[in-house]
Each structure stands twice: as structure tokens, then as C-alpha cells.
Length: 278
Image 1 (cartoon, one colour):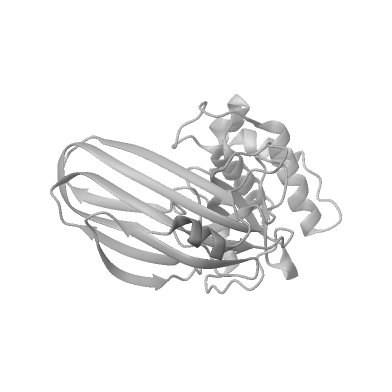
Image 2 (cartoon, rainbow, N blue to C red; image 1 turned 90 degrees about the horizontal axis):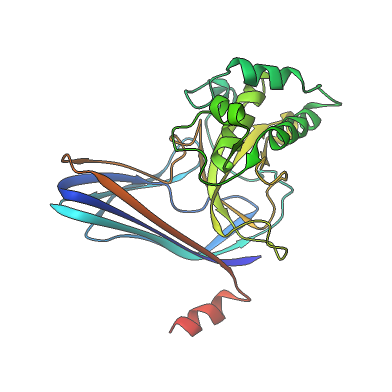
């Protein structure tokens, strides 16, 4: 599938701030399932600094905005060609050992209700089967409902209320997998809607679970599926804050307001898309 993606993030402050430093994880991952075309990242009024690939295989760009300013706009855009890899992350180069992803975080703390859900899942035939069973258990236990949770909602809290968004499903699945001694991590990216319209064009999140010889395999509990060619992978981490596409800090005490717009369009060819824009 050929996709055009535009991701615009605007930070607004009620008073000027300065010396803003941002770490951007906004360039899609490099592996057999996706290949980028003319991808670019822009920060209005910013200067690009260190650029590198970290130990998890994610592309990191450091940007600085000196200010003072009350608005920062970050735009990431480009084309990408994706292939359905049945969720398997094949050809992704990274150096961090999978066992690193057994450690827990505040968002994935193994509370009693999560342990009870994990204990209710039988092991099955093999590790891959177990991972699928865990994902289905989360899909059944947490209904997808936008606006009912917040950025700091934990997996246990989302399970307690029985509803949430993709971030909550992902945190819950990660918690369950780790309780079964399966390394699991949070993945940030994009999802293009299918023809039946059950998914929205949006920034999205899912989990990857390490299942032996297959390596990392993606599981989207929010949509009860494994990532296919509708998914675009950006980067990963222990949880949502660790895998955030944009992280930053600045000098000042202003109140921050955030506005995010993501558009994902399927195109016939990147060449014709470029010509139409010209």
C-alpha cells in the first residue's frame, strides 16, 4: 500500500518560553514491511541538531527553538510504501536485548485486576498462541471508547472502567505479556482506515511481543488484529511516554496547549502525488 502522511503538531503557550529542546521520533522505522519516500521533518523557527539511530533502531532528530515564542509547529510528512508482514517485524536492526522489555513502568504496573485477567488466559499451544490469547483477552475486557481516559491513565485504571483508547489497550496488553514472562513494548505510529471504515486515519499505538524465533510480533488489541499494510511504524518504548514521537523541554512557566492533526491518504503512486502538488 502506498500512503501519504501529514502529521502536524502545534504547541501554544500562554506566555513566551525560550530555549526549547525537542527529541523527535517522527521518521518511520526501517524494516522489510515499509519503505519511505521523500520524508521530511520541519520545526518552525527551529535548528536541527544531533541526528542518530538509537539502540532500539528508532531514528531520532534533535531540534532547538531559541525563542522567546508562544507557538511551536512541528510538521512531519512524506510517502511510505507498506507491506503486510502479518505483524512480524522482520529486518529491523536494533541492539537492545528483548529481555529489557520485561521491566514494568507506572503505566503497566501489574495490579491485582491485571493479574487476574492474565491468570484467566491459558497458555495454549505455543508462545505465539499465548500472545494472541492475551491480545484477545484485552480486546474483550476493554471496549474502545474515545475521550474516557487521559494520557496518564494506567492499564489497571482502564481495565477497572472497562473502556479506553488504543493507548490503554496497549498498556494493558504489555502488562499481561510481561506477567507471562514475554517481553513486550509500546509502538507508536499511524493507521489508515480500511474500506469498511472501522478504523480512523490517526496517530495510533499497538504492542509488540517477543515470541521466540519469530522475534517481535505486533498485536493491536484495540482493533483485535495484527498490524498489516494499513499500519505505519514510527518507534517503540517501554510505554507511551517512552515511545512518544515528540519529547521536549523549555525554559518558562507558561501553560501549554496541544493541537495535533494527522492525515493518512492512500495514493496510486508517489510520482503522480508530487505532480499534483506542483
